Figure 1 (cartoon, rainbow, N blue to C red):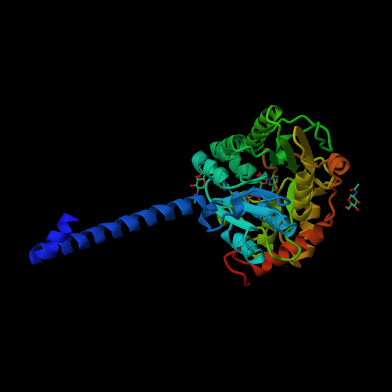
Figure 2: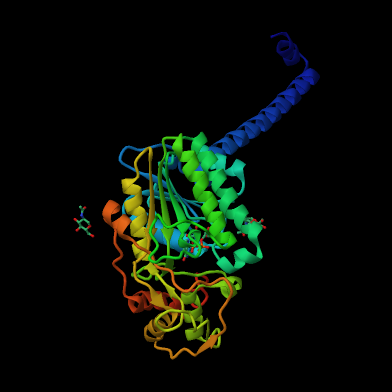
Length: 407
Ligand SMILES: NC(=O)c1ccc[n+]([C@@H]2O[C@H](COP(=O)([O-])OP(=O)(O)OC[C@H]3O[C@@H](n4cnc5c(N)ncnc54)[C@H](O)[C@@H]3O)[C@@H](O)[C@H]2O)c1
Ligand SMILES: *[C@@H]1O[C@H](CO)[C@@H](O)[C@H](O)[C@H]1NC(C)=O
Ligand SMILES: *[C@@H]1O[C@H](CO)[C@@H](O)[C@H](O)[C@H]1NC(C)=O
Ligand SMILES: *[C@@H]1O[C@H](CO)[C@@H](O)[C@H](O)[C@H]1NC(C)=O
């Protein structure tokens, strides 16, 4: 070329020539760097959860990939453990607002092989992010656990409940519709029945929820049912009663946020009393029309509950909706519960009997015959003291929940 032959003959121009070559070289480097950056971002964006593996983005023959929302929480983590043990592929989405990264770490240590478990830190209230998660992952089914779940809190902060239960379920449904994920197992609750006149509660018992928690869950159920009618969906709605217990092998437990203690459930309160974190148990109401005057509830062990989820998933069929109570069918009084807790912990917990708390109903227990007849599921861990012993063992060795593992 002319310029180069000229530059060769003229030293000064030669220097210029060298200079432009350096400039070109520099521009090339910048270009390459920019290009690589774009490629990296592209790869990162297209790798699920930025975890560096893409196994999760393809359907695989013989592998069922389940999206577990709220998988860092109490029930969701136990369900994930069971699914992984049964060779399902699991993606957990949780924003850790109430769950524990410690539970995720334990699951990751148990199932480190690629393509088994993926954790995505995300907020299900963010429709764009949820849509992206569905675009980047090939889910076969969704187990939707994520929620806020304290009756007392729901009466104080109703919007928190309609937002994080009802609205977030709508976002999940929209993503399922758009990305053609057809199977949904939904966590509902006996609180959707409200205060039925007749016990036990069957699936035909009218639903008249009396608090925002129950109402928000009932609304979510209604949306799911309406949507499923024209969408060729396979839907299972499980209405749990009072969940207790933890992994019999002691790998996972129940570790709610300390600030939620005041709204807490009876098992948590019993353990806190046994550990001396609170001075004793305050039982609200001993003059109910029950055998011993205290409220009667149906306590279901979390191991049985997650078994019901797996059976529900296995039996989910397109254009079919299954609604099931998940309970033992046996009511236990608060007094019975406290006695079982004393035996399980070996601590003579102090109990005060106070006035009734508004909004509590005397007796709630399930008729679980439908789920037995249709899914062959029945509760096996029905010894209250045994379930509490298992949970206590984990509590005792995890004084700060998942924060530490020593006592
Ligand atoms: N525990 C019970 O006795 C009981 C009884 C009936 C029904 N249920 C239902 O079971 C499900 C699980 O309950 P749990 O006791 O395991 O509760 P949990 O609080 O331990 O778990 C809920 C999980 O969902 C996550 N989450 C909440 N909002 C989120 C959001 N916007 N984005 C991402 N993650 C979010 C939390 O971080 C938490 O890990 C809930 O739907 C609850 O209503 C529980
Ligand atoms: C989790 O999600 C809730 C909405 O459900 C949001 O208010 C909260 O800020 C989120 N927390 C984190 C850590 O993302
Ligand atoms: C739930 O929704 C409310 C908005 O009503 C928000 O402030 C809150 O952080 C949300 N998340 C949780 C986990 O409660
Ligand atoms: C039902 O479950 C039991 C175990 O709980 C099993 O032994 C039995 O074979 C199952 N029955 C059917 C029809 O699948």
